Length: 312
Image 1 (cartoon, one colour):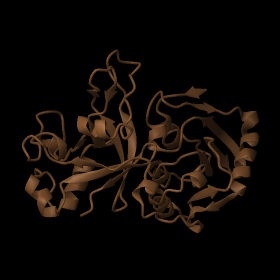
Image 2 (spheres, rainbow, N blue to C red):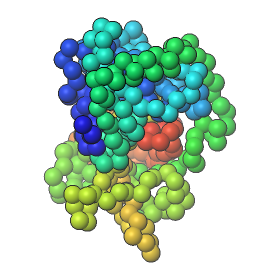
Image 3 (spheres, rainbow, N blue to C red):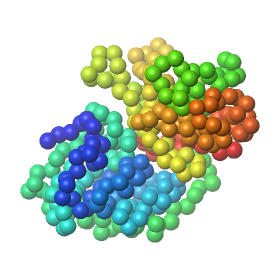
Image 4 (cartoon, one colour):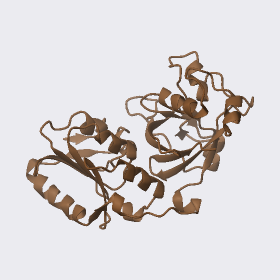
């Protein structure tokens, strides 16, 4: 069976009940799905196939923090772009998936972009053998040294975009948008928040935010892009690029804002906690000034994984 929608459910909602172990071999990884594996009742082995070619210090820190006895993360010596997922009962493989989807929010939560195919039962041992070749060349992530570069250009794939948290037209925070989205006259929750993506950001950093893909189930709609945030204080958060704005003089549509996902108030609660102001309270420009910062630095660690810096 071929899957191209709701791929995340294959890993977190419809897993084999008799599984005792899970192995993920993925070219790229995202921290959030790995974190979610800790909620499942079996041991997990995660192999970061292309770590040797993409030694990102910030991502390495996150993976080492997630690594434990029940959720082990490995870096192989053999560079591997494959995406293979295998569930076992003891040493017996019982279900396998193979395809194009990385084990990241970007790979598993964006419909139609990636595919996963269920492996025939008579090929499960062949798949297991292939994964073991890669795994046998690997070391546990906490035994590998990844050095922090002092040059921003070596840490990130793209330039750092300073995204302001207030309305540049008024110099004040928005009344019903941005950090105060929860005060909009709409179907919102009190602490809902977003970070607006301005056309200036798109012009200056054309590769930072991806072009939105058309929704095949809607004539004019676009698909929202699920991503992951790694914050400067180590917090991992799932996010989504939402809304749409046209690129001038073209049919291309780009996202209009960054929000947390699946709950839009997760971002608002997090920002209010860092600003040390009560929940459900409107965020003012003076709160940002008092904190010492009215921007968030946004950059890419790897595809679909963003680094957000709100440090003072």
